[in-house]
Image (cartoon, rainbow, N blue to C red):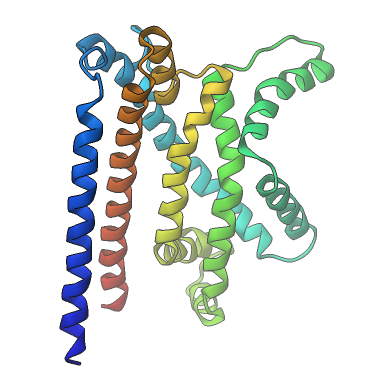
Length: 265
């Protein structure tokens, strides 16, 4: 017992020393960066909002993330329920999830953007084009939903049979049972894993640049092509991604603590 405070003080000392060393290194690193040409009002506005008259930059990255969260959560829950069921629907859901998880995200983006118009043309004999932002939303929905489904399926397996029987005994239909009792309970239980996946999705939205979506990373690349200050620009990008990801992780932790207290009460 006496060693516990000693170990805690030692851990704090290690963290403090690491923080001091990192701060010194960051000071000398930033001292040699030429940030003045980058941090002009026009450049900051471009990184935050993209081209004039249309949404882009960091605003588009955040908007994509906010739209994708409910879409992937609903579709992922649907897939998780199917995979936890019996019969052919279980195998269809399992096949979908395994195929998507075994496919690189960049391939899913390319497939949606290039293959879907070709497929529709062959079926309907009409030329159509998919807007890059719409293609990105579809691709990320397809990809992330498979991972969300596996997370939720793990949560579904942790729900006791008695909980389901109690819900059905209240006169609820199976849909109502899952929608109002089981899925909300699973989300609370699996919140850390869900938030970790959504933080990863937030960072993965940078891959949308390959089909011409001017999100945050693409805006930074365009700015770099004009200023040729790679270290300065992408250091700023890395810091912004880190700050936002850290804030999301902290929020997830606070929500987890709050909901665990509610469950224990």
